[in-house]
Each structure stands twice: as structure tokens, then as C-alpha cells.
Image 1 (cartoon, helix red, strand yellow):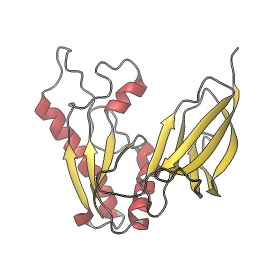
Image 2 (image 1 turned 45 degrees about the horizontal axis):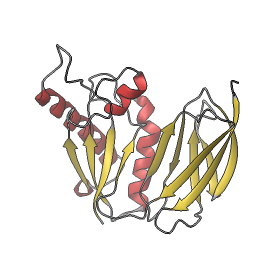
Image 3 (image 1 turned 45 degrees about the vertical axis):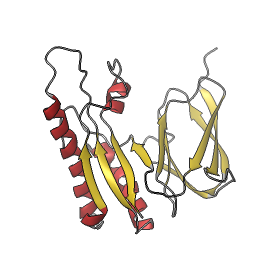
Image 4 (image 1 turned 90 degrees about the horizontal axis):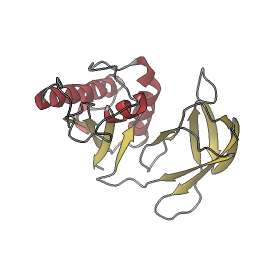
Length: 210
């Protein structure tokens, strides 16, 4: 049967120790107008709709920025376990809510909340240095696709757009490196949905210094 009303069980763990952890959790998708902020929880239950897309995110001192964007499971209960990784060089994560329209390099307004979370992450962890990595959507087996150099340039410019935003918000430039990977690391070689296209056209951050 179709399931419209669901429960989402959120649990927060330290990824290293697997012990319960308390943190502020932000959930986007429950309220269409603004994110819901849950203060200092380690587990909680929310009521959700399975036809909406959600993002659950956590920014806390000493841990990697966490954000997970998803459609709920097709079941009465969706289990969302947040495993926060203690900061170390080499950690990498995708920030799926930083988006660019089409082949543009200008940040979409929908990116603002995720960008502000990234600013918060950098301010709560003032010794962290990151590399901002841009990726492109550009299927390689279709006629008329642009050159590899075009995609590299676009993804570098997108990463630079994120870096510029952080600098405008007070993050020092020497904490921020950029790299454009072009379309060499697409998650979906031949995307058929907007979701898959956006996942190819993504921004990652990697910890490069502490």
C-alpha cells in the first residue's frame, strides 16, 4: 500500500566510537518555508511525508560537516543515522544543497543555507583548511558534448564561487583551496533524472589541514 505519513527516527553517533552524541540538527523539508532546528538531540522522532525530499545536517565543533539529502524509504519508518566523523586530514564530503543552474558558475539562491552552514563549520573549527572541489555533469558518450577542458574550467570557477562566498563571510583565503575535476568523476554516467544530474554537478569539500 502507499505510505504517505511516516516516522523518521534520527540517531546521532560519534563515527569513531559509535557512542551516542548530542548535537544541533537541522532538517530541511518538513517546513517548506524554513528549516527545522532541533537543539542538542541524540535521538528523536519526526513525522514526515514520503513525497518530499529532505536534508539533514549537523555542524559542530571538532567534527566534519555532515549533510545528507534524500527521499525517505518506502516504509512506515525511515531510519536516519548520523555518524559524525572526528576531524582529520583527508576527510571529504559532498554538499548536495550547493547548486548551480545548467552550465552556469553563479551560485543558485537555493544554495544560501548550505553555504551559511559551511561558513559556520569553518568558524566553529578555526584551524581547519579545506579544498573546495567542483564537479560537472557532462555525459561522455553523447554527441555534441563540450570538451574536457570546458568542464574543468567550469568546475574550477564553481569551486572559486564557493571560495569567494566564504571569504566575503570572513573566512581567511589561506584556509581555502580550490580544484575543478570536470566531468571525470560523475556518479551517474548517463543521468536520466534531475536528481542524478544534480549529483553529477556537485561540490565537495576535503579537509587538507588542521
